[in-house]
Amino acid sequence: MPHSQSADAILRLAIQVEEEGALFYRKLAGLARNPAVKETLLSLAEDELRHQKDLAQIANSFSSDGQAVSFPVNVIGMMKNSTETLKRMMKGAQPMDADVLTLGQAFNIAINNEKSAIRVYTDLANIFTPDLAVVLKKIIEEEKGHLDKLVRIKNFRLS
Image (cartoon, rainbow, N blue to C red; front, side):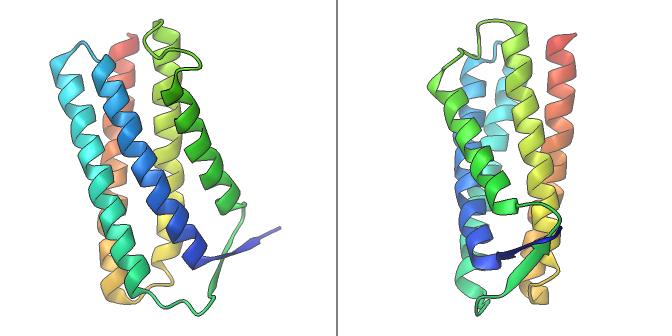
C-alpha cells in the first residue's frame, strides 16, 4: 500500500538526517585509528553539512502547495527512525569503539542511512523543477559515493 507524504515534511526531515549524519561521521572519525579512514569520514561529514545546506535551499525555493509524494513505504517514519538510531549510537549506549562488531554495526547503520537517502532523494527529484532536481541529483551522486566509501571502509576494517 503506497504512502502519500508531504514533500515539505520530507525535505525538513532530510535536513535533520543530513545534520545527524555529519555528527555521526565525526564521531566515527574520532574513533578511527587509520589516518586515511579518519580523513574519509571527516570528508563525509563535510559533504553531509553541504547537503544540509543544499536541501535547505531546495526547501526554501520549492513551493509544493501541500504536494504529496507517493512512496511504497512510510518515508517519514523511516527518516525519523534513521535520526533516532544515529542519536542513540552517538550517545554511546554501546560504545562504538568497544569492539569490531560494534564498529561494524555503526558502519551498517551508516550504509543503510545512505541507501535510504538515495531512494528518498531519487523519488523527490521527480517532482522538482529541473533546476532544483539538478541540485538533488548532485546530492544523490555524492550519497552513492558515500555508500561506496563506507562499504570499502567496513570491509577493510573488519577484514
